[in-house]
Amino acid sequence: MRGEQLSRYYDNSGLRVTALSGADFAIYPGEFIVVLGPSGSGKSTLLNILGGMDHPSEGKLWHGDKDITKYSLDALAAYRRDVVGFIFQFFNLIPSLTAIENVDLSASIVKSAMKPKEVLDMVGLSGREKHFPSQLSGGEQQRVSIARAIVKRPGLLLCDEPTGALDSTNSAAIIKLLAEVGHKLNCPVIVITHEVSIAKIANRVFYMKDGRIDRQENNPEPLSPDDLTW
Image (tube, rainbow, N blue to C red; front, side, top):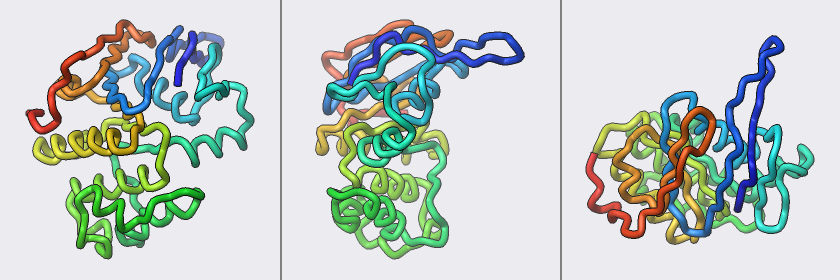
């Protein structure tokens, strides 16, 4: 995937507000990318465009040889369904469904999904399949949301503050899990966060400022997720 001069503008009572300006980047299979920057720097706008939830005002976004910016609304919906896995700060589980039912709901909308039980085992929830969200800890609920995102074998995993609602112990475990599943699926994982320490395990870090990717830094020797401390 690559972005070419991606920009997003909003008109507010005749005043143009720039949320993203001229972003150029490439994303490769299996990469773990951390996006850092203060609130309002454009992190969420970038994530929303990557995920097909927002449309750039200018520029191009390529997934393989296809320019996503030219997609119709139906094609964008199919892209979100088939290609992108989303993980958010808040778990967004359906409270009336068990863990395995939450995952199965995601699996049911794609053709080549993994088996929900196998995916729950993969994220460390063996034996918790029939528990409802209210019976799970915050860390366990986030593991269910990860299982829900990866059960469809995504080509891109987007994580918006995935540790924001967790304590330090669970945060470290969730980041380690995200790195592991990205490696297993050969899927790029992009994490928006305010936790600077997570950048130590990233292959690359995007530093955002004033709606721009201010700089990109390669990390030739990323720290093992096992060694990550909060």
